[in-house]
Image 1: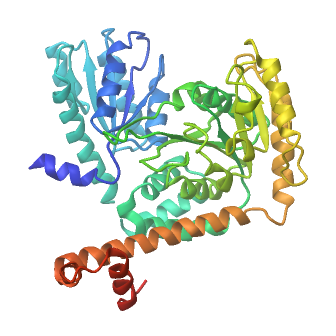
Image 2 (image 1 turned 60 degrees about the vertical axis):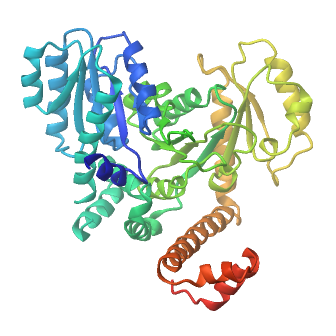
Image 3 (image 1 turned 135 degrees about the vertical axis):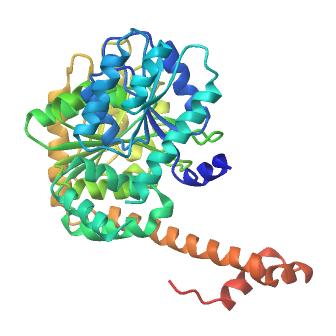
Amino acid sequence: MENGKNRLLFKDKPVKVLLAKPGIDGHDRGILVLAKAFRDAGMEVLYAGLLPTPESVVETAVNEDVDVVALSLLNGAHLTVFRKVADIMKSKGIDDIALVGGGTIPDEDKPELEAIGVTGNYGPGTPLSVIIDHVTTRAAEARKKKISR
Amino acid sequence: MSPLELKSILEGIERSDTRSVARAISIVETPSMHLERNLIIKGIYHKTGHAGIIGITGPPGIGKSTMIGNLCKMLSSENFKVSVLAVDASSPFSGGSLLGNRIRMQENLSRYGVFMRSLANRGLNGGLSRAVWDAVDILDAAGNDFIIVETVGAGQADLDIVNLADTVIVVLGPGLGDQIQAIKAGIMEIGHIFVVNKIDRDGSFIAIKDLEETLAFTTQGDWKIPVYGTNSLTTEGYGDLINGIKNHTTLAKSSPEFRRKRYREEMRIVMQDEVSRIINRKFNEMILNNGEIDSLLESKTDPYSAARKILKGNSVKL
């Protein structure tokens, strides 16, 4: 049911997602796999490239008016860096772009991330369909906020 | 969308507020928000006409995005306000798109405060997206001195940029084929400036010579078409390129034909859209409500005569 509603929401303007590995993490094979998978699922995908700062990730997200920023880190810095991105967005009053996380994130870190608005937090081995569904759900929330202002 | 929100977006565009500009572009990219789109364009149109619109086209991988990154840096350093629109292809199968132009320019965008927006062409052929026309108007009204538009660059049929841009730059490279390739129709007829990029590679001298010879017989009014050789990694050749851009932009703006081609093309597209929308709506109504189409089928009327009959018999309110 939810899926059907989402499809209508994105019928003439697909989900737009920014994939980013803010900070110092050069292992990009996983995120490139995600980029292709999201594209094949019908999304418009941006990838922030290597070594973007949290500030430039937010700037890109705003200029491109994405629905979701999907953050991924494999270097253990997720609590610090994801929080930085969330804080910058909050300070700019951005409430219509969703944050989704992923990478090597231990279960005990997930509640803290969810408390700052970063959901999902999927680790290696998660089926792509699970990630795509979650991103779509969060994107739908963000899109509804954008169009109902 | 509430009238208050619309007013806030219009005011934001005039103040060059990036969030408002980004929001406005999203609205014009959303077909179902066409009423809001019309109001936005109506509200800002009087402020357009200042920006020089530079179109960049050429085959994939030739260095368009990297070049734009360099142009942004150099023009910004001269205190020009620059923004970028880059169009990428949507998958005809999934409808999705990898908007990969930004990544090549990101460092310069951040450092020089340049606004950039990536647009998926969503199935439109010709190298542009439906929304790029309106996005250019919005960026123009937001006070940009230059708006750089990068086309999809899939081949010789990506020619729509010629109607949108004031100055079209065709980027080519060494080793793409000999002079016969160079005289193929389309892409050779739309450029005001030609660039051979990657001049550190073999064959670049010959490529420049070939182009110069071919273009000796092409005219763009009074403008003599230059061919520049560039190396986008070292920015060799960019000084001449930027002078060429400035010269042509000045010439284009002083011409009585300035923007005429563009306005006509925009009108044609908008009118075509409106008429399509009305006909589709009417057609769907007919299918649902009355048996007119089915009865034409039963009487074995051919589709051409049937369509004429229906169009004649229906008056449509705009």
